[in-house]
Length: 129
Image (cartoon, rainbow, N blue to C red):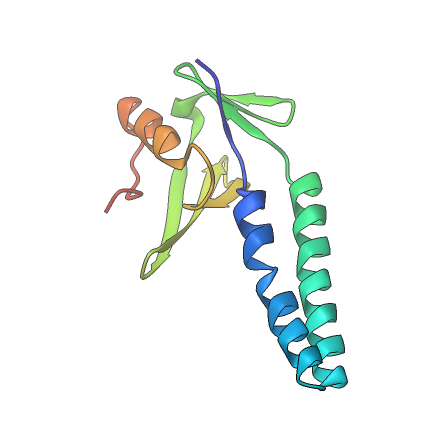
């Protein structure tokens, strides 16, 4: 079965509505400048999210290997999985032949399934700890 490692754009877009809601509260309170600033921040974050979701190459994986865009890889071709943690966030980089081929974090859909495939194929990582 094929899975896609992808950003959770819906959750991010909902979170980016917070400045808009706060801006509307400021508008009701008569603070037009605060409303404009928060509106620009909210819209900017949403536009950035849309651009990032369109620009990012897709990582599609199954039990045999994975594809990033049109480039196929096998799990044994992974040189290293680098990850950085801060509290509940994990940022991951996949390194093949000394180059970072893909970056993602633990909020991506199918993150755990990808980590399981790495474990099943003997790739050294610390994504679950």
